[in-house]
Every structure is written in C-alpha cells, then in structure tokens.
Image (cartoon, helix red, strand yellow):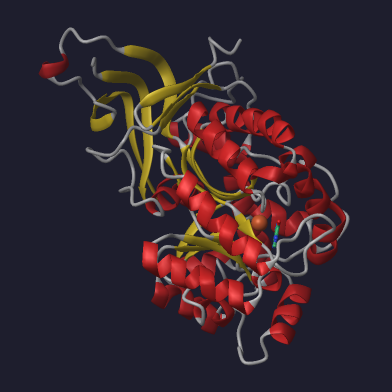
Length: 425
Ligand code: GUN
Ligand code: FE
C-alpha cells in the first residue's frame, strides 16, 4: 500500500488554545496511520506520490459528539417551542417515521454523505428506538466511511404516539441490536437512554448493568432546559440533582457523554469532573430552542472534558466549523450575562473542541499524532478575496466564521479518502 502524502498548510489543534501550523508542509500516513508532519519531506518518501494541495489548509477532520440522525429530515424546522413541547410536536412524530426501513435507508444515506462532505469523520449519534433503522444507519455510516458510536434510543415512558416501547421490548430490542451490531468495523454501539424522563427505573437499571457487564459507552442528555429539570426532580425526589438519576443506575463514568449541561451548577460540574464524564456543548440547539447559554468557559477552566455537538435538529446544520463559531458566540453571550467576568473562547480553543477534544472520547490522541489513524480534510480558501496577505491563523479564523460552501475539497477518515470534491462535482 502506497503511503498517503498530503502537501499544504498543515494545521492541527493538539492542545486547548494552541494551533500547530506547518506552512508548505507534508502530512504522511502509512497503512492508514499518521507517520508525521514535516516542513520538508523525509528522505524515505523520496519518489513517493504526493497529493499537492498548494497552499490549501489541511486540517484535522471533525468530531460531532451529539446529533440525532432521525431528526435530519426536520433540519431547519420547528424552532418555535421549548424542549419538552418541541419533542412532542416535532421530534417524536419525525422519529416515528423510522419504523419504515425504506424511509430510513433513503434518509440515512443522504445524512452519511452530507457528514462526509462536511469533513465530519467521527460521530456519537442518537438513532431512534427502532432497531432495524438503527442497523441501517450504522450500515450507511460505515459505507460512507464515517466512524464512531451510534445508539438505539431507549424510551419506555413519556414518548409520543407510535414512539414508545414497553420496558420488556426496550430490553429485548437492545440485546438484539447489540447482537446484530457486532460485524461493523468502525461503527460501534453506545447505550442511549434518551433522557431520564424517557426511561423507567427498571430500564435504567438494566442499561446500567449492561454498561458494566459489556464495558459499553453511554450517551444521554443532562440539564438542558429548566422545565426538564423540574420534571426530572418530580420523577426522582430521592435525587437532589439531575446527574444523580444517571449515577444511581451506573450510567455515569469516563465512557459517558452528556449533551447540553446548560444548567449544571458547580456541584453537578464537579460530579462530571470527578467521574470523567464528557460534556457535549451544543450551542446552536441551546439557542434555537431557547434552552439557555451553557457556561462553556467555566467548564473548561474547571478542567472538565468538553467537546462539541451539532445536536441536529435542535441544531439547524451539520457544519462543525459553524458549530465551533456558535460555541465562541455562546461563550461571548455568557461573558455578557456574567458581567464580563468570564473570558470568551478563542478560535484555536473552538477548533480544539471540534477536533481533538471530540476524538478523545474514542481514545484518540490529540492533533496529528504519529500512530493515529488519519482523519483529515483539505479546505481551499483561495477563491475568497483578501483584505491583505493572510497569516495561517487569520485563514483559520475565517474558515471557522465564514461559511464557505464547496471549500472542503477532500476528506480522509480512518486512513481512507472518503470524499473528493472532484468526484462529487
Ligand atoms: N432531550 C431528549 N431528547 C432530546 C432531543 O431529541 N433533542 C434535544 N435537544 N434534547 C433532548
Ligand atoms: Fe440531543
């Protein structure tokens, strides 16, 4: 197998707040794994074919650590209600359609391709409660070259018309889904109690046992909206805080990702830090459905693990550069609300959250570390007018803030090229 050698302005975010930039550099991989980044190509690659992207930016590809695949058809719709009403009015009826496997195939094929074209190569994704549609989703992601985790959703209470399981069905279907998920190479199952209001204690206890017995990761929602908090408190009077409704069933640890955490106070944040739970910040969704402004700066300063999610279709798009920009804007809103006492996120920090921080949930080392599978993309910004000759940092800032349709020219995932603008017109 030939090595992959890419030439361009190589940019990675190996630590929070610092970019590593190699202008006119080379990024190489062998057997799909990164061997290094250099300003001059090492002797051992003399004569090997180089894909020369000129001055284009070569970035780490993105990780979307929270999104709802069956909400893809309602992207950009139904933003006029707060969370619990929004679920009943829009999300649940849309998800109910995924009992139809033909519909699932059609939608998930499009979603997988759109993710690849946007340079998202790792995902942590909610499916619906339907086992067969979930397996189709996993198949389509794998076919498109996307890697990561997908969860069949568990929900045995407070569901919608045609969108609820009995406790027994939920348990049996989870076991069937795990059994039938075994053959995927790059897409793995993650246990997915939708959120505490959706799952009885018996179901939560079952999932907690399963997580422990099979060492499975877990994803859910936490402290997104104030009406949700009140509902959870009424369902679990024994739990002073929301996070305890997961912790008491063994659904709380270093392999747990919790989306939103808008209203997590110092004590709840401390519980996340101690357990090594990853917070998935979903700034677009938090604003679209009026959930609030998560204290993302404070969470980072306190040393929590934080990554980013598009949370479609609470979020209205899949573009992780745009999601990174939204995270910066949310931190600025938080700064204003905090009386200017907190700092906002920098571009370098937001890029780290959209790449290395998310990849860490899958055990990847940060940046373009040697030995890691190649996850990279080429972003060509040469068509844009410039106010003056731009530094690489300015180009990265513009890539984050300015939507540039068609700028992503090629994407590699797990060492394989999964998107090429030339081949996609
Ligand atoms: N909480 C429970 N389910 C959902 C969902 O589908 N979207 C969001 N944003 N929050 C949730
Ligand atoms: Fe969500």
